[in-house]
Image 1 (spheres, rainbow, N blue to C red):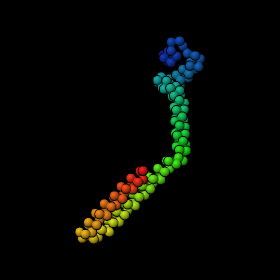
Image 2: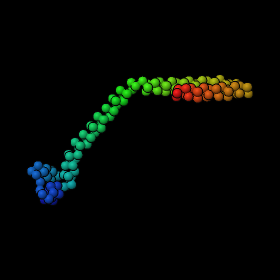
Image 3: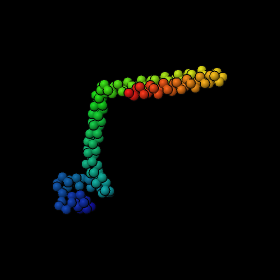
Image 4: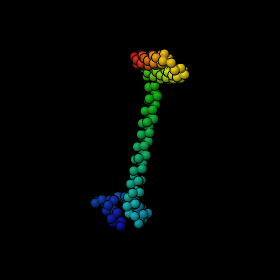
Length: 137
């Protein structure tokens, strides 16, 4: 068993004394399953590499977040954000007004009110379109 393991692990030219100690240690630790020794050795070797990779990725994400926070002070970006917020508020207000007008007009059933309601809706939609165009400029 040790000869097969040493031949597989150390290669054609033999092992250094460190590799021989590892081989003896893991074959005596896992005598029943020889492949398990290779798995443990592989995990011991790969675990630090994986941990370093995760650390580097997390450091990259932290720096990216910090740089993104520093770029938030850009006046052009802040103006765009203000425009987007204002547009969202105007849309909510337009929807509320439309909903109030719809509820108020549902109580009145004559045809003249129906015509007025449609014209009010058209005006509200046109006002929203104009607002969008003005904020995009």
